[in-house]
Amino acid sequence: KMALIDYKKCHPEKCDNGICAAALACSHKLLRQEAPYDIPMTDPSVCRGCGDCVRACPLKAIVIVRM
Image (cartoon, rainbow, N blue to C red; front, side):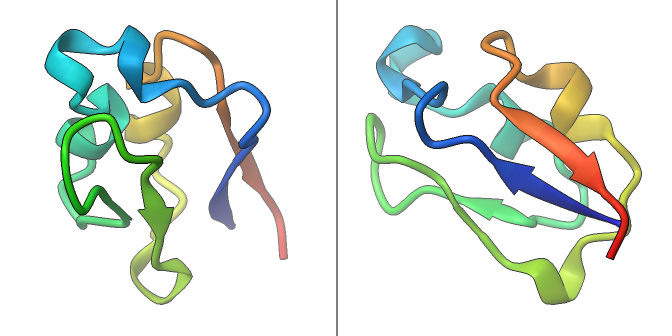
């Protein structure tokens, strides 16, 4: 399992202060933003498929898929 971002739905400007809510929720640091308002990037090698980021994303821009 791993998290994937739907970049058509991802709009960090809609999160508080441009900080991705899903990135903050991920304890494994799968999602990273270089700066506020930047689109977060994923690191699939650390994804555990826990779904914390999915639940935290207010825009429903993240899904868990089976690989």
